[in-house]
Image (cartoon, rainbow, N blue to C red):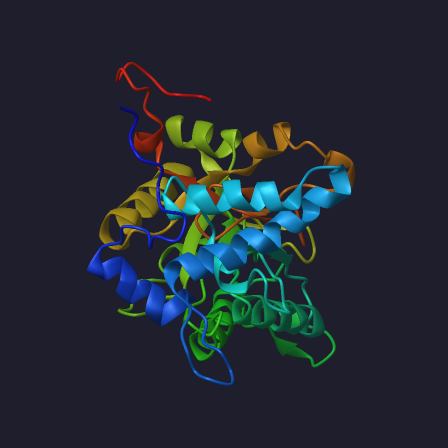
Length: 312
């Protein structure tokens, strides 16, 4: 006899820990009664919301919603957190990650911070390239003062992230990238020396093939002021790579991102170069681009005979 069909109203088989996380972060409460939705109710809400687009392409939204619900109920597929949190609600912000540009001006720096705060409030994460910012102690003509440098502004972004829980339920996540040729690169590499520093950031150094070759050849890397384009110093490439490696071993940061390699496969170079990734680093994005992520439990797609994957 074939196995009985699953009960469409059955709650998914969740561990106690999973149920606790759902209750704390994802399940919505009715404003009037205070009643909390169930896990299957959450999946129904998400499935109904994302299925509405099917009508624009001549497909049946109800049939799609049932398929999407079954995939989530059986834990074969789960969308990213903002989709679980926001689908079917007025905000409808479903994307997980965004990249925001950081311009070398006070208005530009704080415009980007404002946008990041709104993204974090809706449950998204943000990636930034701070490589355009002038280095520490560089001149600021408008005030005749000196600049504080990228790491100081990263600390401001980190404090703002601390103040805004991502989606009202979890801490925000950020990626900070700095070019290996930036004069403040060593300060950036050492940014997590102090316990608890930049705890809302992952850090990555943007390196290129020329830097790696210089490290192999015991050469030097030029340090270039991004404001003026002028070389302001040189650094032993191998020593810098050793420092990056030691910091990554001790603190888990920084990583390396090969932006020259990324941009060789940039599908839209006419829109500009890719300068950053999402917070976890798996998705390079242009400024103001976003990505919508999901997770598949591959073990649940194994063929019945155990030999491979059931692609159907």
